[in-house]
Length: 305
Length: 258
Image (cartoon, rainbow over all chains, first blue to last red; front, side):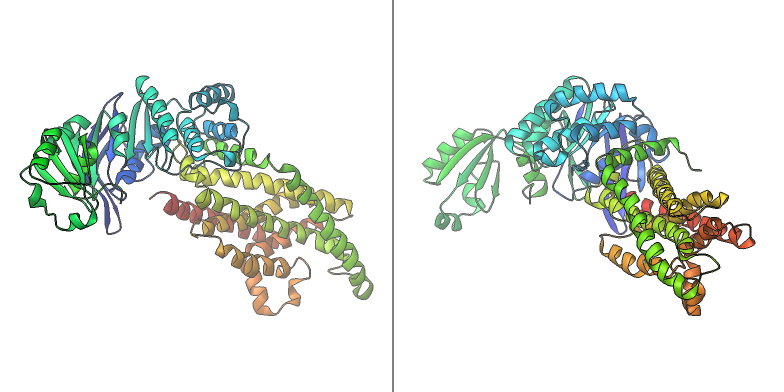
């Protein structure tokens, strides 16, 4: 569905996307993971045929964005980072005016609007002004708008940023249903749990480049251990600790300002060994490795800065 | 070069927005010519008529009405091509959303201008109707002043659209209104003959589109349009529209395609 080779984007002197390669297949959920400013949105905008490619090759649905932008866009659904809804129009009218741009006849558009608003659970709000909707509702409306043309690919740029947990889960549920219907989804996120829940495959971007790629499980297996022990210490104790204190107990040690992470195959075993050695943290948490750990490993810093 | 069909959804979009407050807008379109022609044309005109007789051989109201028709079109176009466009460009980012559809930048421009043309047509036709009620514009070709007023609005509005696409906020709009639109409204020969002005102001007035619109509308209203000057005015107006189109395509593309 999407093929990129040495894809690059430059804004003046600044390189926003630096020679990245990736491909997305039919029915796949593909994720771009990375901190703000890594080049995720710029990549999405190039796929969406609204930002011209500086160099490299890009094919979307077998077509060239530079020459066939309108034909490609006709088959894409785009959910931008910021809700670009028209606050002067009602919920229904927002979708109706948008449908016209895809040459959808009015009767058909009205049918789809009913169906889509039902799908995003806004069925009872057709006539309401957009201003009166909550953040989560606006997001869902934006998703409904992105689906109005029955797109082959849906591009979602940070779909759940700024939403409360309930709104996020509702949104994930809807995206999961789209995936089940066979829609190809491409999304960017800086939430690890989102990427793990939704993505079949993903790439991690940092400083305009792809630094890792694979399925969530592959990435964890490759860049992290099976389990992680998180230790917290009282402030006084924390100052006297060094990474070397723990290096016997774990394959890798990460010293963060507020906690110490020990990467290990067997979390409980590591905790026992620490106790025997007389290390007494204020709190201990053993958990499975997540993509957050992968990210920390790859970039040496936390994802949301 | 200009494809109308892909631009229609933008005009439809505008219509959907307009439907929300069409009563207020229409009321304004009727009331403002009523007020202006009533107070200036009849009131001030009565005073002027008593002391000087007539301007260019016609009553003050006959002189004023076509000028106001043209300047009203200019003001309507300026208002439409500043704040509403900025809302979609920056505050609501509507264009960003629309460019995710098959629409291209040129379709957005064409669509907005199509809608502007319809608005100008409505404003000018209503103004004309009011003027006729006051006894102005009774010559048979006076009705042609409606399309000329539309063209005058476009000659101003299209370059303003190009300008709006270059600004990052609405600060410039105050400057535009106070130092360009308002002086032009007063000094474009709609309230008094241009020859009353010092030469350098006359030169400035002629360098801008609205004066040509005023003169041409007046010639049509008074049945004196069959001159070479009229052709010159028409060419000047068309030149502003054309130059504005090229500029707008350039500035809007630069703004939206990055």
